[in-house]
Image 1 (cartoon, rainbow, N blue to C red):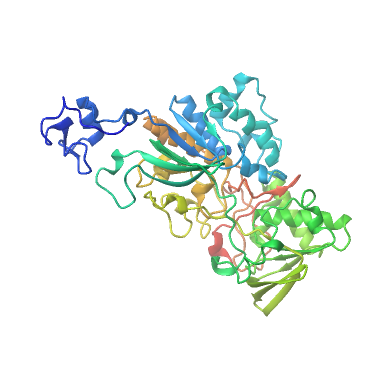
Image 2 (image 1 turned 120 degrees about the horizontal axis):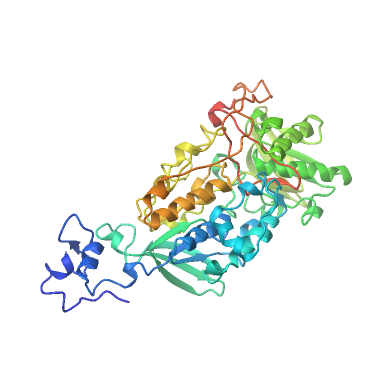
Length: 509
C-alpha cells in the first residue's frame, strides 16, 4: 500500500497527523520528542502504511543452524518472519561439509527454542555426548526443525539475497530514514528478482563459499585464479567423494587452522592404504605450538585428540611441515601445479597435484552496501563485538556473553548473527550464535530485559598460553576459560582439534 494523505486528517502541512511536511521526504514530528511513526500512529492518520503498524515480517537470511534458531525464537514470540535460503535445501552450507565431524557434542549444537518446537512433534534429541557430523546435523536436526508447523510455510529455498537497503532511501539519506522499512532484494532460482519489505533483517548467512585466498597479505597469489582446477577447496572429503584426487598423489595443504588439521590427518590415514600418497603442510608462521592445542586438558576430548595426533604425524615424518611459507605464485605444469613461496631460507617451490587452501573464510559484505553497518576494520565484525574476538589478541579464553546491544548497527533493525557476525575471526561456536539470535529476537519483541540478560556456556580447551618465543612446543594447560571453535571448519570423522594462545597472534614468534 502506498503512502497517501488522509483528507480528513490534513488541514495544512503543519497540522497533518502531528507531523510537518506530511507524507513527503522532509516530514518530521511536530513534537521533537516523538518519532514520525509514533506521531502518525497516535493520530490515527491514514498516511501510515498498514505495514508500518507491525504487519511486515522479520527477514532471516540463511536456513542454517543459527538462521533456523532465529526463526524458532521469532515463532515463539509470535512475530511474523520469513527465512530466505540461497541453497536448494535447508542447511545447504552445512551439507557441503557433511563428512566433517563437529568438535562439540550435541548438547552444544541445538537451540533451546528449536527443541521446544521439535519435542511436540515426537522428535528425540540425539545423545547429548555424541559428536555429530555436518550430515547428522542436517538430517537429525535442521530438516526436522524446518518441518515443524510454525516454520514450514515460512522458509524459502533457492532464494539468494543480493542486496539490503531501505525502501526508498539509499545509504546516504538520513532524514526520516528509520521511517522507511528495510528492503531485501532476492533472486530466486529461476532468475526472478523481487523485493521484500521488512521491519528487521537478521543476516545469518555465514561465510561458507567465501574462502580467503592462499596468497600472502590477504590477496590472491598471481596465477591463483588460473590454478582453480588444482584447488580442492577448504574441506575436501578425502576418504570419500574426493579420494581419487588424493590417493597416490602429492597434496599441499596451506593453512594453520582447524580445516587444515582435519584434512592433514585424513590424508595421513589415506597414505597408510594408498602407496605414493604424499603430504606437505605449508604455514605462514614459524611456530606451530599453538596449533596443537590442549590435548587431554581439552573439555572436548575429540578436539584435543586431533591436536595430539597432528603433532605425532609431523614428528613421525608422515606430514612434511614447511614453516614460514608465504605463497607468491601458482603455475600450472601438466597434471601438477607449481606453488612458489618465500621462506626464511629463500624462495621455495612445492610441486603438487592438488592444493587445499585451508586459509579460513571472510564475510560477503557486498550485499550490505546500502545499509549503514559499523564494522571493525580488522575483523570485519560489529565494532562492539570485535574486541572480544580479535585473533590478534584473543585465541584462548571464553567469549563474553553478548547479545543485541553488542550486535546492533547504526541501521535500525539490521543485525549480523552467527558465523558472519565474527567476520574474519575464526573462533565461532554454535552456542554463541544461538544466544545472539535469542537476544536479538527478544529486543525485536520489545522485551528489553530478556534481550539484555545473556548467558553463554562454552567448553574449555585446556590451552591458556604458550612460550611466545616458539621454543617450547608444549602448550601450558592451566584450566583457563573456554575457547570457542568454529563449526564449519572441523575434523574428519572421529577426531577434533583445539587451538589457542594466551595473546593470540601477538604471541607468535
